[in-house]
Length: 167
Ligand code: S3P
Image 1 (cartoon, rainbow, N blue to C red):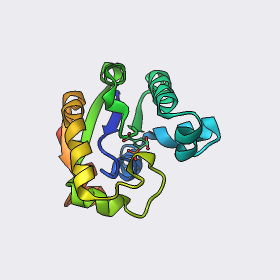
Image 2 (tube, protein in one colour):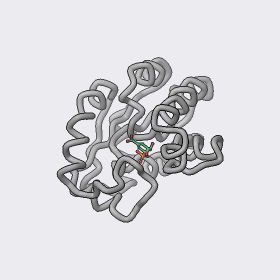
Image 3 (cartoon, rainbow, N blue to C red):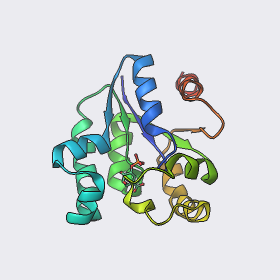
Image 4 (cartoon, helix red, strand yellow):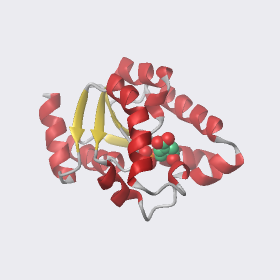
């Protein structure tokens, strides 16, 4: 029983899908952002502002290494996790990596009223999102064992598609 890692851009649906998938598969869910916020006693915008993005990325790598030993989890990864090669190695060594995608317009709609993502503050437009997604796409695709486009699917449908692709 390997860990299931959900990766993808902010707003791709990782957290909602992880929660539903955890219920369906009767597995514990680990939400990386929430775990880091709890450990640090600060919100993500506070961590970025007071300690810097590099510190946040170290927290992510440390947590991923730790959770490799906590199988079998469903892990909802922060959107930047696959940007580091060592993170991808950690995930692939003990799990299956599932990439969730969505069209930039769909992402924008999902994130527009949320202020917890420092990288999108002041950039809530589809062209910025499309550009950043495109920059990240090669790393996301290299990391992934399987991909599901969530743009037109309900959370339940995404879970069913993941489960059928895993089998
Ligand atoms: C980030 C995504 C966020 C969070 C942080 C950085 C990123 O997580 O980890 O704001 O670099 O894409 P979500 O993908 O869960 O929004």
